[in-house]
Length: 191
Image 1 (cartoon, rainbow, N blue to C red):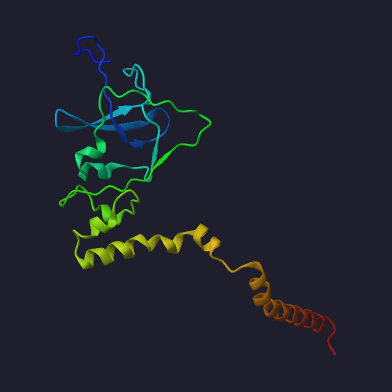
Image 2 (tube, one colour):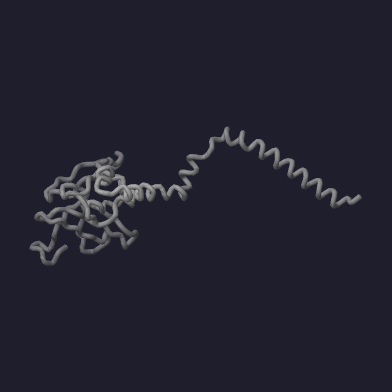
């Protein structure tokens, strides 16, 4: 609802580039071109001023956060205001848009190369950076591997190889237990 609009209702169509928070505080940001100007509007999902929300096209992107579209050509976030909703079935899987966006030349709003976005064409992005910055970005992208428990779990030693490796350890552990039992018995029965 918009009290300044002629019918007290204003319609905005845009690409959802960000969704934040949870519960009653959930917000989403829409971005579109209006009269050759990029416009971003953040809405509160449960705001009483929203009359309705209509999904025009259902698709998933490679990243949850599409803020890098602020530094991309405007064609990536231009949606016609008279777009007709595309039909979709709840039983069908959500289609994935695997498009990789080429960013405009720097300066950028953020150091996008350090955040590990999959939807950015990195080869094109690295062409704007020095060799030192590219090396730093590659090192930064692998820094999480140290703490990635799932990656460590998936790359662990297979069970047959582990059994073979731990066979000697098991024998040494049994010998150690026997030795400890002998020490306990000898302390109980002094000569």
